[in-house]
Every structure is written in C-alpha cells, then in structure tokens.
Length: 248
Image (tube, rainbow, N blue to C red; front, side, top):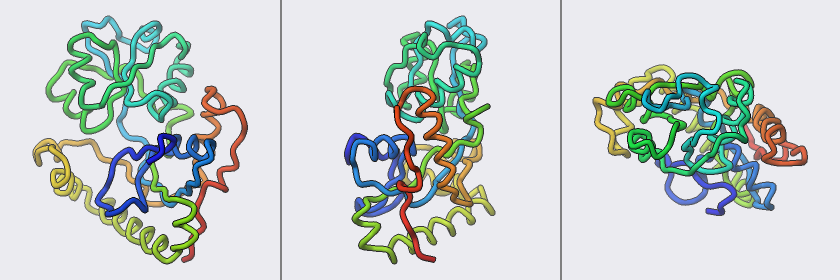
C-alpha cells in the first residue's frame, strides 16, 4: 500500500480492495496523486488522550511544552489532533518533539522515561488504567477535534468505478455491522479477541468504540481545515472529489 495512505488496521476483509485508513492519510495520499476514493466512515473520537507518568512532572497541558510525545506516525491523525489540542490549550505545538513509536511500545517507553508523554488509544487506555500509574494530561478530541471523523474505508478510484455493485454491497454490510454493534456493544468483547491478542477479560473492559452508525463523509472537511490550519497542506482540497459515488 502506498505510503500516502497506509492502512491503520485490517478488519476481516479478504484482498486489497477495501482497507480502513486514517482519513488524514487518505487526503495526503490524494494530494500526492494517488487515485483514492473514500467509501465509508468507520469511527469517531473515543477516550484518546496524551498520557504521562506522575514522575514526569507533567500534570497539565502547559507542562508538555518542550517535552517528547510519542505518536504512531509523524504527520498522521495523532500528530494533527495533538497539535490542535496543544494549540487550543495555549501550548505552542512546535515546542513539542513528536517521535514515532508503535502503540504497543508506548507504555513501556513512558515507564522508562524514554518519552515524556504518549498519545494513547484503546486498548492501551484500558491497559494503562489497569496496570500503570499513567494519567491523562490532555484530551486530544476536544474543541475543534471533538467530533472529528477519525478513520474510514477507502478503495482505489479504478475499483470504485469498475465495481459499483460490490461497493454498494460492502457499504450495506458495514451499515448492518455498525447497527448490530450499536444495539449490542458487548459484541466487541466477543469479536476483538478473535483477531487480536487481547484476552476476553481485557476486551470486556474496553471503553466503548464510537463506531460511525451513520456515515457522513462530508464531515471530512473538518479534517481538511485542520490540516491547512496546522501546515499539513497548503491549498484547499475539494473533499467531494475524494468520496466514491455509490448507488443505493
């Protein structure tokens, strides 16, 4: 998969036709000339935050100035939301050093002091709460990022054009899956251990995932605006051109 739109994770789909992506990366990929089309939203913000250890001396957002913050990829949704949240908390985002770390390594890096703070998402929020003294210092989904589209499903423009029926069927299946999870959130605890190393006990403790029961891809304009505001892109992007046309 091209670097401009790396898959965040695979969710049980065989073949390369559809993958779930950070929506910021899809926009960046399109700007690099990659023929991408977004098909459906996957989820919106959850309990993600910048976490630190009490021994770090970081107790409030202002203490993050000049510190090292772990994210899972430079220039991605983690950096974008962190920069927005820092800026709105009165902290110069450029004063923070962002470093790349795989999410499973972030808690260990916090514990050893190799990083001062880390952008944690589930299941690492729950693991941190249950096994460490790490505390949330800054909510990365507040203010301008409060209801930001986070991830969605994308495909190539060629596949979308040549396979409209498949695209429509995929969307209907995702719609149904989202409704099932919305009606019975306990299904997450049953399904997640089947394709991860999480135990059923930990999976049952996860904070609810904010799945997009209704897909509103037009809202990615919020991400586009943030990207321009924080220097990720220079020119305005017509987000409608990024969305795949679908039949009912």
